[in-house]
Length: 217
Image (cartoon, rainbow, N blue to C red; front, side, top):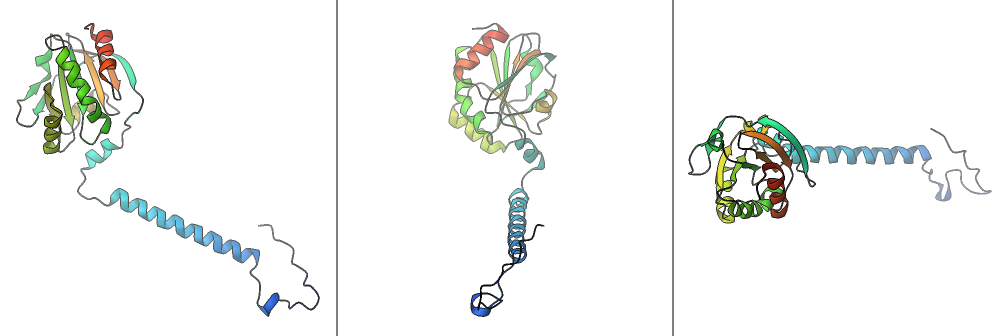
C-alpha cells in the first residue's frame, strides 16, 4: 500500500486538526470501505443461496433441465440417426404412444413444457401447420418434466389437436441429444432423425423446415 506523506500543520493549528480531534488516516478510511464492501458481498451471496435453494419442493431433475439454455436464436443440426424406438407415457387421459407407430410417415416431433415460454408461444404455430399438413405429415408434441395437470390445461386452452405424449423424466430428450428448449425433430418415413432444430419457430419457418428436410409442402 502506498502511504500519503503526513500533512504539516498550519501555525497555531492543533496537531489533531481543527477542533482538536484526531483526523481519520487514509489507512483507516480504506479499511472501512473494504469492510463495507466485504459485508455487501456476503449479504449478496447469502441472498443468492436463499433464492436458488429456498424451494425444497422443486424436482432436482426439473431444476437441472431448466438451467439448460433456452435459445433466443435458433440452432439447427443436420443428422442421420434413428429415432429411438421407445414407448412414451400417455398425455392427460390419452393413449400410450409408441414412436414405432409413426414409421412410414414424415414426423415432426416437438419437445415442450409449460415452464418454457418460447415453447408455449410456438404451439399455436405448430397447431396451424399440423392442421394444414394433416394426412401428409404427423405431428407429435412431447411434454417433458412438467406438472401434468398444468400441461393438460395449457394444451386444452391452446386448442392443441395434434398427438401429445409425456416424457416424464426427459429420457427421450436426453437420448436425442437435446440441449435447449424448445427442440423440434424432423423424422423421415424410414424413422431417421434428419434434422434437429433448437429454439422457437413460427408457422412460416416451420413450413420451410418441413419442405427442406421432409420434402413436403
